[in-house]
Every structure is written in C-alpha cells, then in structure tokens.
Image 1 (spheres, rainbow, N blue to C red):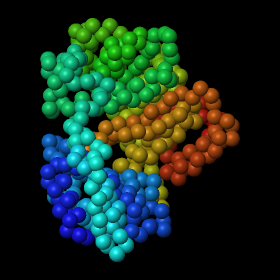
Image 2: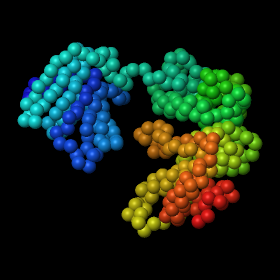
Image 3: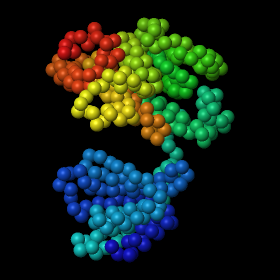
Image 4: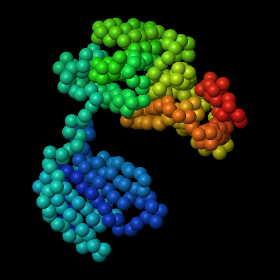
Amino acid sequence: MQEELLELIKRLLGERLLIQATLSQVRRRDPSGNGCTKVTVKPVELKGELNYQFSSFCGPKVFHDNLRPEEAEARFAELFAEQFRQGLLQTGEADYQVLISKKGKTGILKKPPTKQAVAAITHNRKKNYVIEEGEPVPFLVELGIMNAEGKVLAKKYDKFRQINRFLEMIADVLPHLPQGRTLHMVDFGCGKSYLTFALYHYLKVMQGIDLRVVGLDLKEDVISSCSALAQRLSYDGLRFLVGDIAQYDGLQQVDMVVTLHACDTATDAALEKAVRWGASVILSVPCCQHELFRQVRSEVLGPLLQHGILKERFSALATDAIRAKLLELLGYRTQLLEFIDMEHTPKNILIRAVRSEKPLPPAEQAKLAESYIAFRNFLQADLYLERAMKPELAALLKS
C-alpha cells in the first residue's frame, strides 16, 4: 500500500478530522455469504475519550469494535491491505476517495466535502431522551438523580439512561393500551420505584393520561419511603402497598403489568396475574431463575450443563424462552428485548407482551404448541407458569 494513504489516515485521525469512513469492494468474496462486505467507521466519545467505532457488515449481522486512535490507524491499514479495495474518507474539509487496483496500486481522489465537521464526534451530540437533562424533574431530584438545576449527577447517569430506555418502551406500547378511560397499572416488586415514578410522571404529567398505578413490594421500609415521596410529589394516582405478588387481589382489571427483577417464580406469579386480568401490555425483566436450573436434564447438553455458570445462564435464557412461548399460546405477541447494556447487568432481557386482538388460526396455534411441547420435554421442564395456567392451556398442551 502506498505511503500516501497511510499518511492520510494518520493525519485524519491525529487531527480529529475524520467524520465518517466507508470501506467496500472486497478483494475476495466469501462463498458462504457470511463474509464482511462493508465496514463503516465513525468517531465516538466513550468515557470522555475519543474512540473510533468500526461497524463490520458480515452477512446478516453487524459487529462493532471501539478502538483508540492508534488502534484505529492499524485497523485501517489492515483492512485496506487485506480486505477492501475502495474507501470513502469524509471530513469537513474534503472527501477522499480511495481506489486500490488488483495489482495494489493506490489512487486517492480529493473531492468537495459532503459532511459537516460539527458531526465529527457522534456521542457529543445531545441525545434526544424522553426526559431531557437541563430542566429539573421533581421525582428525579428527590431520588438523587438530578440536582436542583436539572443536571444529572455523574454517578447516576446509568440510572438516568435506564429510566429513559424504559420510557421509550412505554411510549412504544401506548397505542396498545385502551383509550378514553382511566388506565390501571401494577408494578410488581417495585423496590425503590425509580421506574414506577418515571412511569407515572411520563403518562400523567407529560402525556396527560388519567391513570392509577399500584407499586407492590415485600419490604415495608421501602414502601413507606415510596409512599411518602408520592405524597410529597402530589402523585395522587400512585400508591404503594406491602404485599406478595402471588397473594395480591386488590384489583379486578389491570391494563398494564410491569415486573422488573422479581426473583425466580415471582416473575411467573406476576405473569399469571397479568394474563388472568387480561392485561393489554406486560413488561417483564426477570431476575434469578432457579426452577429450571434444578430440573434441566439432557445428555446432549451435558458439556454445557456440567459447568455451573453455563448451566445457570442457559437455564435463565431457556426459562425466558418458555415464558415467551406460553404467553404466545395464551394470546399475546411477545418480543425479547435488551433493556439496558450488558456491561451494567447480565439481567437485561425484557419480555414485552402485547395482547393480540385476534386469536391465532388453529393450524398456527397447533404448530406453536407442538414446538413448545418439544422444547419443554427436551429440557424435562415442569415450570410454574404452565402449571398455574393449566386450565387455559389444557386444550392446547395435550401431550
């Protein structure tokens, strides 16, 4: 590769001029169809330091690597030398078109810029959060996430992002909730209730929706503290109760059930309640799952199950898969989503279930039941949610 290209890359990275780069035109195509056909690069700011994010488009997947400037320079050199024969390096001063012939001759064409320099570091741009920073929000100030001027405290930024991620999910399901009447919602295992307060603030204060929200938890001191805060904030439609999920019978109808990090089968108890209420929306982030861990048996999976940490993670994932399938059999459309970044907690899978307006056609329902039964029997699983909903599932799960 010509020294001119290496010097250009070094200058653009060293002087922080690069806005975006796209590498394409692979030297040799992967016959499997899973090889990388394109790599894009953009500068990002992570923990106050400049990095370059390399996004590799390989078959149906995209892989991301965040590299320091010196590492990025080496990666550029490697990609141009071994994988790609074409590149577009975009800066605020010019676009640089890189063309490498089959014989290795490199040409660089300088063209007028097509990107603005202000876009250089994407993480410096203000993210459009549901709750914006800069304006004090009373419940966030009370909970110690913001100061009185509306600035998010540095140590609480992860929690601030988590709250906004949760509210994005609430915004997504709003069209599936009943319209034109008071909504009833329950947060099972609400704990310190950061998200319960966020839910109420978003729907009542920001959206003007009439609603009643109940937060339920076993810890009396936590419930007492949350009740006092709700009173100080004049959140009249929000109340907190001490109680067990499985025993709660304070409502006859609930439109949305939220259960975040309820331990083990407490999640299943909450899902059972939600289904029996005919809740339009269920949002569940399961916590520890011990039930399947104690039950799962499989010679085929022996190499995996013999390791405790792998068995634990597999049992958690399989349990959530079973929950999602059972909810589908019970009339819900389900999705499993990433709730927050894996770096913050491994317990980051959210089950989002929306009640279907129409039942599945019999043939499709039978196929779903057959798939579920095969998976459950393979794992030798006998789980809470299926036992609890046995009358409703009896006609479908005959095996």
